[in-house]
Structure formats: structure tokens, C-alpha cells
Image (tube, rainbow, N blue to C red; front, side):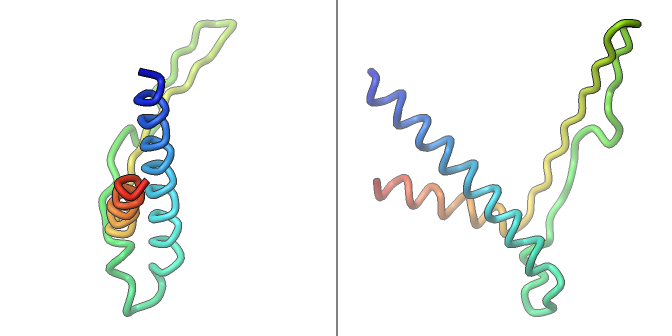
Length: 85
């Protein structure tokens, strides 16, 4: 059971790394005309933070996800790396 739990964490870390690296690559090459398609994507979530003011404590909640072609390619590469492990 412990081995399966560790494998899940490895998969989560690889997917997170794939999303981050893919998003970074998409931002970097977005200005290059031949590679601008990698930065194409959609952003959704809470556009302005949800504020909960309790007088003494103020909490702000915000969540935004941006999917790009480069991020999706990063996820696919992360899954392929995980399958090779």
C-alpha cells in the first residue's frame, strides 16, 4: 500500500512540474510569431477575489486556471515520463 501512495505523489509532482514548465515555455515563446500557437489558451476562475471580512480577520479567496497548448503538452510529457518510471 505504501508503494502505491508514493507512486501517486510522484505522479502529482510530475504533473505539477509539467504544467508549470509548459506554462513557462508558453509565456516565453508567446512573442515569437512561429511559436505563438503554444501560448494559445483559455483562462477561467474567479476574476476578482472573494473577500470575507470578519472584522478582526479578512480572508480573500481567488482561484484562476490558465490552460495553454504548451501546458497541455507539458502534462502529456509528464505522463509519458511517469509511464517510463
